[in-house]
Length: 296
Image (cartoon, rainbow, N blue to C red; front, side, top):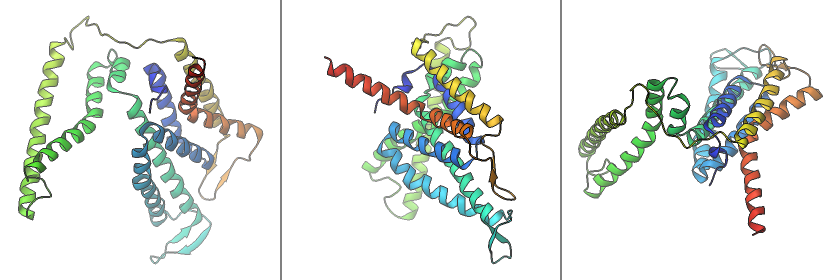
């Protein structure tokens, strides 16, 4: 599905994800956690479709449950004792709640990072940081795309080996080990050759030379300025609300947070708006497209 937010300037994309991922890591209020995981799930599904739904249900939800269950086994803080474990340690309501909160935070950050990987391509990252930290930006770009390229090439090699009966699922256990070793050897050779080709390609393009110019199609337009202003305004209000303890919540020794007020509700609303910006942009562009089509 076409994503309108990815067509914005790389500064807008990077600023948004840097802010939203940082907030998702820091804000541990239950309302903030629900907002973050809800919109991260929705946006990841919007970007990746059925694949994201399958990934979230088969992997994210089990990780959420396992992480929530592991914490009470090792964390015994809290004053509300529900029961005692066979080891004699108390099982507290606070430790269970904190485990669920930590798991929710962890899953939402992973989902936001999946959205980041779909939007912030290597050319955008190099465009932003190529002049400031050219070597590091190139290395990070290559590392971020290594896993997807490796998976794609591995599927190609495995399919070719399967056609000649040398896949890891063919033959006896010893034959499978031998086939797997052969595939690993092929992939290692491919990675080394790919690294050499990349280095030669970068050298032929003058990478590292002084006064080297770079071509880019990215232009900072009026819509980018408006989006960046909206992100800064909503994000600034959210950060100010966090600084003023409007989203304060503690889990130990007892669960307690600030009383709900109109100001607190406005901060939560601002955070929800911040998390929903990409979806709002896509819905808005979809409505504008349908309206323009209806007038043709």
